[in-house]
Image (tube, rainbow, N blue to C red; front, side, top):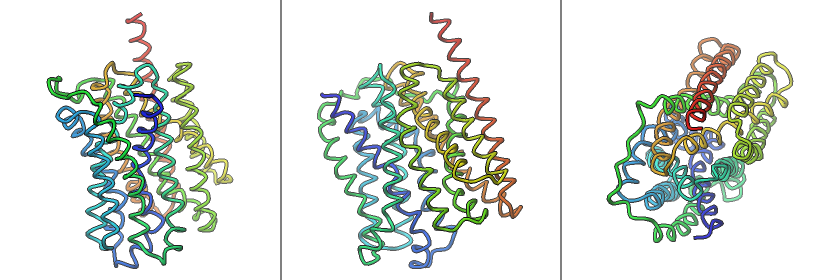
Length: 385
């Protein structure tokens, strides 16, 4: 099978992993007022999928062992597409929560297995993970940016606005149908086990958790932080859009540089330092645009590296899938707690300063984990050499 078709398959699959979440965020206030939804239930529409991405990730390896890699990804895409389309039938609180759950389960299956897919078809080119990470970012940004215009241009129809993203899922299912016909049989393979006793896998999980915690905290709270600094709602939304857009070229550049030159420690720590600088600038109440750019550079580089590490640390697609499932399981659960913790700290203190200090602590912890990962890789390289 041609490599370009495989790249297209990975890209279109990853494109579906965020719209069911990010299409809701811009319309959350409208959804609450239209359906009489309280704040806790509204928060479930974005928090529940992220929790599912962690809780159900280990199931991906079980399903892959039983039905094969490509078929399991197809099932995951079908769950996401079906959940998104279901939102077009009727607009109700129960439908939105149920589809958030189903979509989250689909994302939890596809996430780690797309890393395994890269390991299987591109074993000597882990930089291909940039296709995966960029597609995720593009899908998230596209759904977030276009939800309001689609809503306004279609007679303010919530059902149409939230379900139209199923079109991307249908396209992905059509492309992955061909891959199912070419997959290897899953029978007779050794069952996958999560590397729960492997110290390096544990370190990758901790890194993923710190990275995800920072990413989701910044995504959720950058606009409120900007408004607390005196920025208007429109300017705050623009800053969040810039935060997302800047990540796209960085997500392309960093994995390619690491794949070509190595030096994982340098790029991991450098991206974290950019985040550190961005948070310090916020603490000092400096102009937000440079701070946002620094935060975006850090987040844009760390996410694809978090996806790449299980691929470069393992020898087979099966092993890469298990390591990815473990890192994403623990990582997304920790990540989902980040915005909640920031919110609790803000409610208690009435200021974002203590919350930003907590972010600094998380970044410093993440740098420590990155150094341990890098030192371990160097030691392994010396032994193997």
